[in-house]
Amino acid sequence: MSVRATYTFSGSWSVPAPPSAVHAVLVDLERYPSWWPQVVAVASLGPDDARVLCRSVLPYTLDLVLHAVSRSPARLEVAVSGDLSGSVRFSLTPSGPGTRLELAQEVEVDGLLAAASSVLSPVLRWNHHRMMAGCVDGLASAAAGG
Image (cartoon, rainbow, N blue to C red; front, side):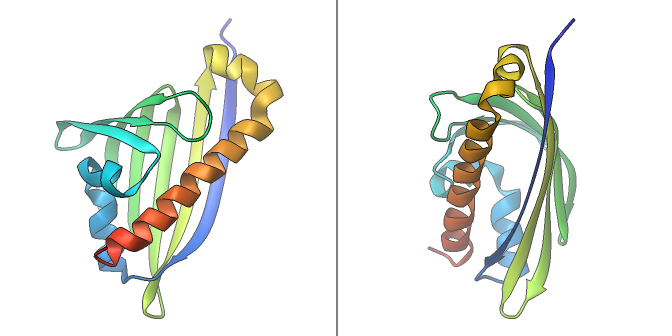
């Protein structure tokens, strides 16, 4: 029997750039390493798929495959497989001169990571929070043309 652990993450941020600029940065996966410090490598696997290596504070690199589900201007969604399985969704709505960015992520882990997560869950959540802080900071700069 395989051990599995489920994680649900959400967040809401204000990005000081219009939704079209935020969308353009988020759909360009191959450039993520240039603005998102925790994304260490991206390789295109075709028009709808990419392999992404992520490493936040903990000494562990996640190896993920992302498959585009939606690229609409108001909603970006990918299916995730690899070290995690599930989905990640960003909703973009205008907010004054900027964008309200909403994250909804539901993923499962199995194997050693799942077994360790019963003890390490607070640390894994903190690690994810640090990764998303890097995303928002880098996204704001990249979407503003910086």
